[in-house]
Image (cartoon, rainbow, N blue to C red):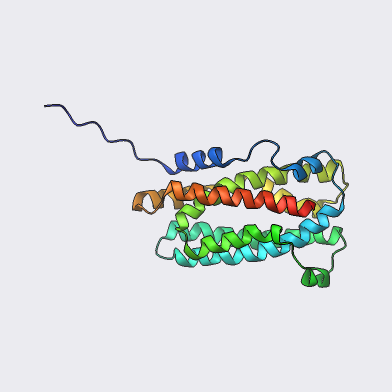
Length: 226
């Protein structure tokens, strides 16, 4: 009698996340505004628009992450991941103030600003995921997007120093996201591994969410440039 074939090894969180980052990375040259900023060719005005739009994005994303944490209350590793993301958004908002100040934006300007639809598609979709998507799948999609976002922020932060003569406080927002985040990485792995172990994680759905997040992020940068 033939022996049964050995069972396929179960995927690990590290493998699932690495695959998502690789598969969902945008094509080279997909973000023309970041390339122009990197070369010092974008107008300085884009930084004011960026700060105005990000003020809206961060506020919305923080609420989405808090909601995802509440939905995952029965799954502590998943809730911990989104709790940390929500805390990170609060820190990012503090650092964004340095860029707003350098661009001459007042509290009144931030409050009265009318955001551009293309810039706000990303947080709107994130809110949709927060309402109904499996949280561990969202964790995978966000991890892939964060890799792209962090790379863009690194390019912008370096260009602000080399080409635009922004002070340290104005660059702090981009430096925050460009820097390694081992705590976020550790909690992402724990959340996804919990999802795999409990059968909650569906990588195909996560990739579908991630593709849209990546597209909406590119739409954000394109809309800032308009």
